[in-house]
Image 1 (tube, rainbow, N blue to C red):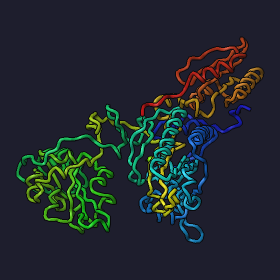
Image 2 (image 1 turned 135 degrees about the vertical axis):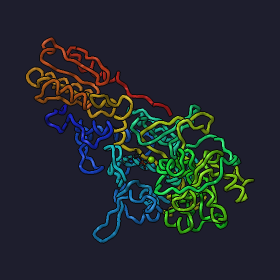
Image 3 (image 1 turned 180 degrees about the vertical axis):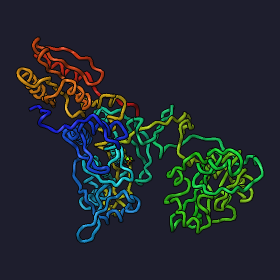
Image 4 (image 1 turned 180 degrees about the horizontal axis):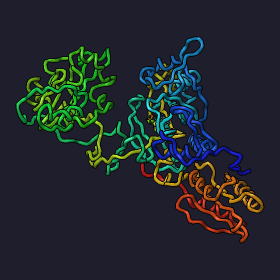
Length: 601
Ligand code: ATP
Ligand code: MG
């Protein structure tokens, strides 16, 4: 039976809630698809759930086709697993932890690497049982610092997560490729435009990662594409060679300047006129950051690392780790101060006379010209800082200058790309990510299987995530995902394929609408019938708002000539068709809409 509007729950509204900043949040609320229960907590109402189920169905079909098998792991996880993997701390406050009645802590899974590794470890003993890729579609919990944008970043959400276990790296490559290709098919079938960019795998402990991103101006992610083909997200994006020169001449006499009440480089630049009588731009400030190497680091390596980037640039955590060594953390204020670094006012010359600190300079900071740097005393900066005169010569580093220079900052629009092209920045929404994990989790949780030589080996893992609800929101945020009137669903994930708008649901209009609905259902489509006692204007407005791909209007006047009207939600003209061919005409129209193609890979 087609769904009758009056028998379901579609609480549409004209007004969006005040906290809804982006179109998907506004429209999903206005279309009565979701309902907010608390900060970052959403209910899925009947329309929202139907769309969610369509995405899940596409995911299931493609996962099964790619040879993955469905499971359901518990959302509640013993906290010990997180201690053993070392992620209890790394995940920090994002991990929801509940205490049971016996006082024991449990985690509400934000992801399932630990749980799946433990499970495979308990159940699989031999290489003969591998490879295996398990997947699940399940509720995840993350205590996001800033839940926002409705279901784009909520605290409870649906994720499809998959985990592959292989005996060797060739196996991992095959499992990863199978998931990569399944992901491309999933996003294509969901009708969302997407790009695939290189992503950082460091935080997950692996060797390669790619991120599936839906281009959208409202996206939180910054991605880069080179005109020569390279593409990566902000965390990962490398830059090509940048000019640098640590031998430049001084621009003037070194001078200490009192700079009271400067908490940031912006404060410093704003106050500089007062402090020094001239203008100062962030690009002329050296930002000196102090990192601490992990305890028990190799003998012979200094415990502190000093990283210098230009004041208008951001240090990139993973690039810093790659240049300076693993496990490195930005030093806490207190520990750095105890060690003699007055955080907020450190300048590169703090390195002089210290055997315990290594120096790393980003290429754009490693230049001649006018520099202001920290004065190594609270509330003091220096101007006319010069690399050669003030650091390299006195530290005896002049001959090693080239070895101090690295790529340490986030890429920016217009940077040289590593492939020789130029990087262009744009925004997008991360909808999925695939990782080659290697043995990080199998080793941490100490699981092994027998290989074909009877040796015990740690299985090699991959992990693969998709944000199921986020696909719905990303579709709306993407190009052609909405217009001023409402949502425009791709045919494949729309809550219903057809909306039959009965202008007055009675008599022969009702009979025609019912017959048409049943014919379309018999042909395999889902149908919503607007049977409300509302004015046509209200019905048409709501039809546009909820975004069903094809609307069929049944009204007494057209029907008296044996006709109904059909119209595609997006860019369609109203067509008058005879009632007896209306079902097939509507199906043909639906099929002609098609789905968006890949925006590029
Ligand atoms: P983000 O960087 O956006 O916080 P993430 O990289 O931490 O995401 P993953 O651990 O890779 O997320 O999770 C897999 C997928 O789950 C993501 O690609 C994303 O689509 C989805 N996802 C992650 N966090 C949320 C959230 N808070 N709300 C909705 N979907 C989410
Ligand atoms: Mg991710």
